[in-house]
Image (cartoon, rainbow, N blue to C red; front, side):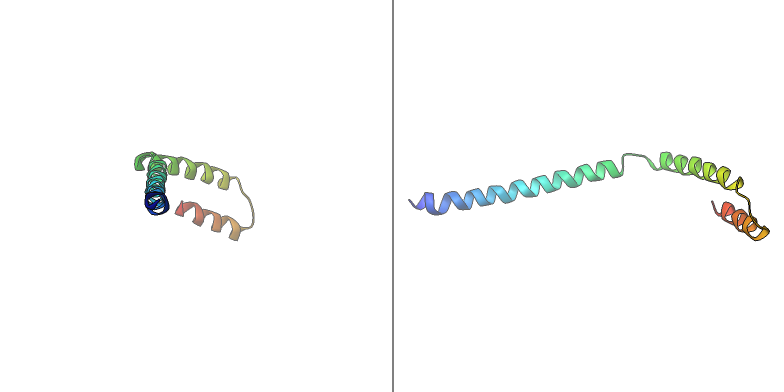
Length: 78
């Protein structure tokens, strides 16, 4: 009777907490794996490619002298 009333619920609760902690840890590890899946050099290369595409698109824009000057300044920052 003592085991059924006290021991089993306590051990079940402890196991439940331990399982939840392990699942949270696994989830955090999977998130980190996904976050750092691409090496920094690959990300730099992607950034340069996208920047070049954006510059090409921006160079096609037209407008007043002020607009064009502002676009050129922005393109220099890319």
